[in-house]
Length: 578
Ligand code: FES
Image 1 (cartoon, rainbow, N blue to C red):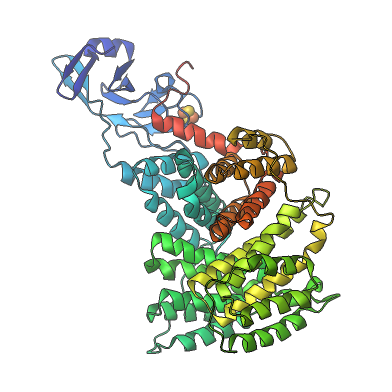
Image 2: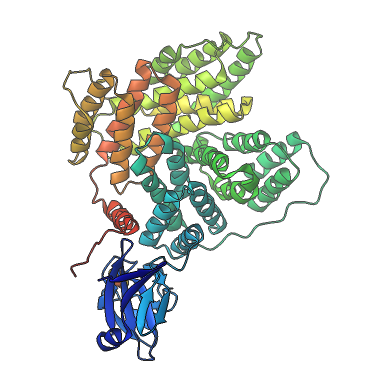
């Protein structure tokens, strides 16, 4: 019990009393502080809540200046509060003064630099793969409006410490950074937390990356670097490709020129690595949009291991038998060259996306390719053709019948995220080479036609009055795919688009979601942006909702960890009664 306050100091006890009792808990300024009288006649004060899980430290053991928590035995140096056990985080410590036989405590923690503290703890969490520490750091930094610190630290950590390069964690983190503005406010730090823990997961146990030096050269021509880079990716020459890319960045090529080099190499073969190659490349550029392109030399070389290793789909049976798609694509690309050079101005009002998509979904592959080429000949901009193919890909999960094998959700997912990546890349760094990805994406949609047989119809509005709780309730039960789609369709018919987007984000972040769930949510929002206000936009959201709910519910352990971090950060008493 506090009895007296002097300036910032609070009288806690008489020295005699503390010497006799050895420990005392007081409350001051909303904090619960525990004082310890040690065997060498010193007095220390620390937060009574263990920073690990909130159990009361008054139950801990003090010996040789070390406080050991009674629960998971984390050890703290009493004078400063630093932990010997990184999983626990440091405990806040408080200045103590003895005046005239009384013990006074300053109830403001000694360490003032919260941003520096949480940044250091985020680094430790990433290095040691400690989820609770990462959650607390993300919550702490987000509260300080330091979201940029989170992204930058985790991005550089993920890119520098994984010799095998860019992995799904960096994509998840970037995807979540992209969607932050449309999420519920209290879901935003959680979205970053999901990204950060997946970056740490990718790095754990991996050898670090060591940079190669750029070449010493006067070469400045973008077309030369572009040609070199494509040659080295083609021949799977990883070191040469890295030196080429680093030199191009050092030589001052623009962001667009650097992105173009990578996108060209990433579409030199068909649907590389089931679409991951171009998707990762696009995400790396988006990550640089967030943390700054001055980090290009830190981030972009991490793409090279994936580029040189990528499976090339012209080598896969499905792309060659029974229809030789590489041959069809070769002819279509020749026709597209001719269509683009026919002289017709690009028609920026072109909006026949639906007709092109229906052809891709249902026609023979040669006919679909001809439809795309003819649209280009009529003036359709390449970026709109990319959007049309992405819309076609988004329709596959809308019509995906749940009698299919569960794993085939991933098949339709891969094509959708690939086509979204081609669309986004085309907006960033358009090129004729990248346009090959439009045609490749259309053929991947074609290959998945059997997953829409039987074809699940698009749900019609039923006037059910469904709301967010309806959707979240469906996510609590397994395989409520069609029921969720119906609820989403009803909300969209009622004009509740923002609520649907927020709710799907909330549902996603409640789960122990995997890479594909994060990807499809973000890609769906990107493509929804292309078709907002049109029925196509609604279809895209319905398809994403079906995919997400097919993968729910999980045990939601990740959210439990996050919740503990949140409550610790708020200063809530988690285990005061213990
Ligand atoms: S070590 Fe203190 S609560 Fe876990």
